[in-house]
Length: 300
Length: 300
Image 1 (tube, each protein chain N blue to C red):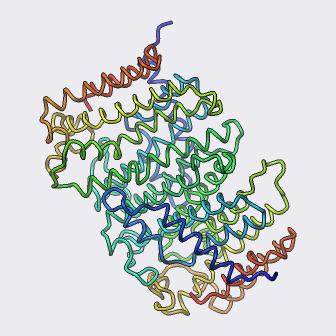
Image 2 (tube, helix red, strand yellow; image 1 turned 120 degrees about the horizontal axis):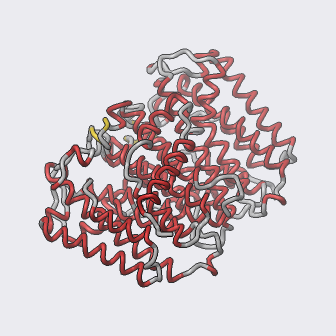
């Protein structure tokens, strides 16, 4: 039977949406669950979740662990968007074609919903049930925490804030994006691989290394394409404000290298991601390949 | 040799301060580490850390795990204060006798530093080293995540926000505080107990149950005393703005039951905490006893 990537995507998207719906209780204290659900459900490409699923399947991972890991990375991603959109940060009013969380519910609720989503991500990774071995739970928390904090997403966001109006070298720009968006995308791949329940000794070191390289390349490619789309797409297609980076004088790959070179660079990174799969005998893994290709060719 | 509680406290406080100093790197991206250190180091009673140490010692826990758990709860506590003080929440300018983080560094930095501290708490609980068994790492993450999120601190904060100017019943007020401050204080005790590295089967169920009861009583007593001090202490002693709850028309135990009854209630809760220790053969545990007593008798 041929692998149908579109069918695979639809199935996984349905799984993660149902699971997220179940994990965030609408009847929670002071309607906080309603605010969290608004920020998480019913939108987004779920790229991080798809990377978790693809990597887990490539490594024959524990399926419950993969589902929880997929929800956890999406919760972290959603919380970061909620906080980034707030007036004291990017002050954005439109996200996925809807008013941002603080516009819809107020700043205090947005702040708290983001905080609660970060905690929920780690709660989802550490169920009481013995179905997921504790060493897998601990490793998933370790990967997610590192990718979310000072040496990952939050650190990258801090550099981003500090660099508005500054001119960065390519190395500085790459470092910012490796942290800001790359770390969580790479962690999604590594968390998927970590769902394999064998103890460390038995893990396939070659495959883990290849997947980490794949994750790094895909993470950076994502950001380069994001910068390109900020210039080439319109708000209706993007579902968020377009042209914002240039308007805020933010350093981007397009500003640094021009549109043509940025597009070339995105394709080089795609080649690098696919080569990493080849080198660790995952050439035949259609989901990982297709995810990388579609990520670079996306229009929004 | 007699146990000297004051010496014990000084030793533990020095340990946790040194460890926190080591965990938060000042040279991190865009000075974010500097902001985090400002919010965490050099202040606070470290009550949560002391509860972790006391419970861990009562259960003969792994000392490295206890130190990491102590730092993790203090990081969560510090992040919650940083976010609570922000203009969109309590809008407070003074904390531990110093300008609050957003006053000193700006709102965006305060928001990000809080976010990064929450992630760091989970990172600290999940070291690569095998010195802490993975089932202990997973359990510590589980307890901390539950106590921090929607069914704990963040949920309580949401109720608090929603209840300004409302009149609450005692049951509603207790529920708010059980979540807002009680959950993390109770989790501190439970995380200390979880540092015992034996697998579940070998754990002392009686002692764990007693410690959980102790943690609940101490958590609630802390808040009742907080409400009393908001009325009776001045800003210089408190290190934060006094009389704020009443000014903001926030529901408190003093507003609900009057000062005398609130003081009686605090002592009843202390008795309950001490009785819980007696019932699980931890009567002789001086650190746990003294912590409960001093918490109720504190002046700031």
